Length: 175
Image 1 (spheres, rainbow, N blue to C red):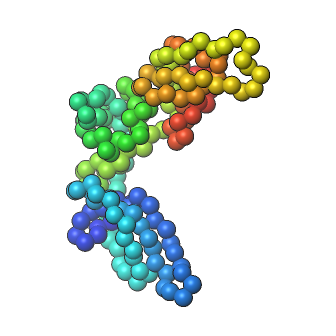
Image 2 (image 1 turned 180 degrees about the horizontal axis):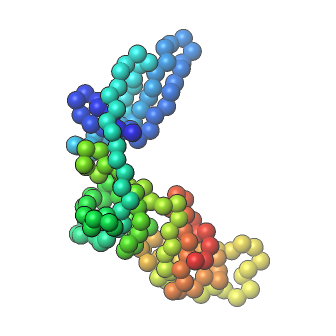
Image 3 (image 1 turned 120 degrees about the vertical axis):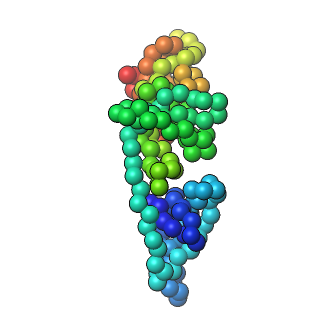
């Protein structure tokens, strides 16, 4: 969610409700300013009023990488949004052309992207498995088309398409 904090629009990254033994309850939150991009930890007492800023989400597709920035387009209107690498974060490891993502906007400014739970990526490089080395669930390191290295079973070969969990970065199955 997004809130107005000290006259500035911020996105709440994490929040915890705490009730220490002999003190009043409070909410500990990590917030990030939309304007500056800086994160901070703040504490709200149970009596404080907070102004909630409306969020909008849009289904978009990854188009291309422009230098350091990532360009996403709306599949219906073909409107594009350019996001800095700090906003994309670890998601860059799973972005291929036309990959669907959900972009969250606050006051027409993109603040967060959300990847689907799994993506299908092609194996760019997979070393040959050693014959007879399959007694236990032995895995080898393979390089995917986005440059990320993951652990996969020995039978995976270069050029195959794999389903990868975007939350853990682990191999799920062949696609």
